[in-house]
Length: 501
Image 1 (tube, rainbow, N blue to C red):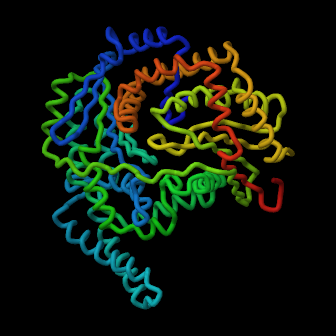
Image 2: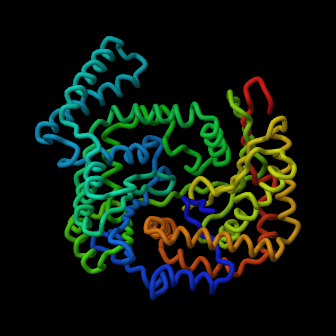
Image 3: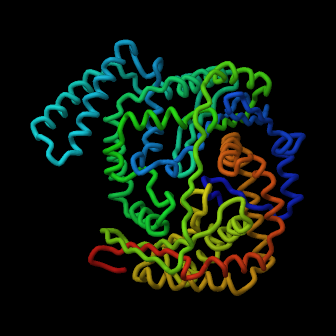
């Protein structure tokens, strides 16, 4: 199980065995000893693990900015910026920036005027059409200056693989793997992106994202149901808002607001780099200092002060769609570093991960009530989140039958001790998945930046296991009893239009 951004924080069966695994993973030293770190004067944090088994390295750049840091005026901006930062800089992605720049300024002026006018109830239709036509003409002229996907092309031509990015509730990450002798190329490109990003094709990309929203949420029953679950479960905390934003959010994002968000937060003081591979620490520090050292620190991302109040009763929401019925059940839970969050990682394995889990065996195999069932933590990890159970009924059974059977299994976990055998098996599974993930350069780099950003210290990756090793069956039962209560749950049901529930 690799929930939480595919980052298993699960325990080993025996703590000593797991430490031995980490020692093998890292070489002669334990992982804790192998990770080397450096903080630059501008706040940029570097974590590096030297692995000489192959002449390559993987780089993760994680900015501690996600959708939770948006305001009502900027919802969707973090996801939009993920797209925009692939568009290039003053030197990349353009055939001639000196000639392109005045055209970009005119596009921004016309596009902004059009946005303002669209927001007025008394807008003149002829004026609107004139601005739309003018914007289209300028965008067509601008195509002559755009060099598509230049970052990707350069990386690919130099042996790069896995070049990608993702935006979550809590953070944004850019990643790539390259030959070890391409470190300076990577540093030059990524420093240029941090210093000189150009938000070209802004108004076009807004429409691309609106289409993405229609495809992935408005027209997708699973995405729609998940959004309804979050917006129902959270009333105050920004976890309730979709990462991509709502249609009106996307449409009303301004270029000025987007640029301001970028300049303030996508900066060294909020950034962690993890490099894992065949690299020398001292040489790498010098290289990064040369390329990134003169970048201003930026503004620290403010913490989210909104606190979700305790839920005092069951919440339910129903969604009708032309699709087969589905069910989501969410329970509020703590997040790291709270003790009960560790316990929930074990509960996750016991209840819903894989064909040997309780829910799968009971509802899918034995009773054949569900076609599929799983569990996960959502939607983020920096703040208290949800333990979510996802299920699809097997025809002719209903969501109500599946729901009742789920609660029976939760009640059993809250009233009966997990057997020593089941606890051992779950720990073994967690340790195996975790070790497999850590063995890859990408997996380790991702985990290092994740924990440094979310927990404030990458050492959580190592220290976590000792804490989990002390969790017994009694604590699992007590945690289940405390959190799996009707008053703490939110239920989202997808009903087939005109059909079964």
